Length: 148
Image 1 (cartoon, rainbow, N blue to C red):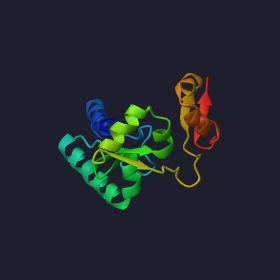
Image 2 (cartoon, helix red, strand yellow; image 1 turned 90 degrees about the vertical axis):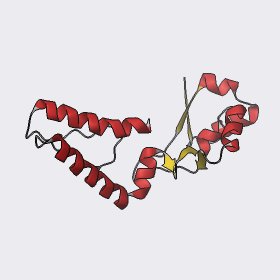
Image 3 (cartoon, rainbow, N blue to C red; image 1 turned 30 degrees about the vertical axis):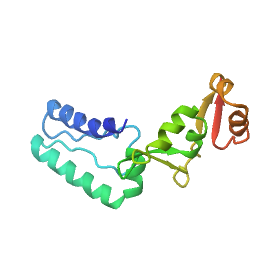
Image 4 (cartoon, rainbow, N blue to C red; image 1 turned 180 degrees about the vertical axis):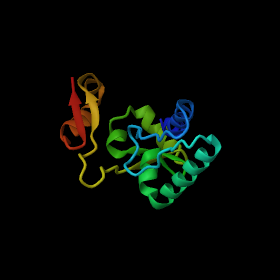
């Protein structure tokens, strides 16, 4: 998923270049935070790419937490929410715990003013959980959304 976030802006740059010089790309990719740099096509693809990369680097420096959330990485680690970890099969949990260099289990919260982050759990998934895990999911409606 994080590779798509890197690839999408480059694809937009190519599309804008093909569309013709002087076209500004106004599209903001879904999932990118407000204020994330956009590519402007001046007709010089190399210059446009350099300007975008510079703007992106500056944005990353000014928004390190948002960038970590965007990429799902903390110092090269994949961030897994505590609520997501709690409902994973035991084998997967063990793999994650056995690889602390690859994974980081953290309390993931929604940005101020946005809806809380919930992990979706289907009724079918819930039926495969241990009784303790199922009870935990049901007892935490702010963390889990049970769907049919």
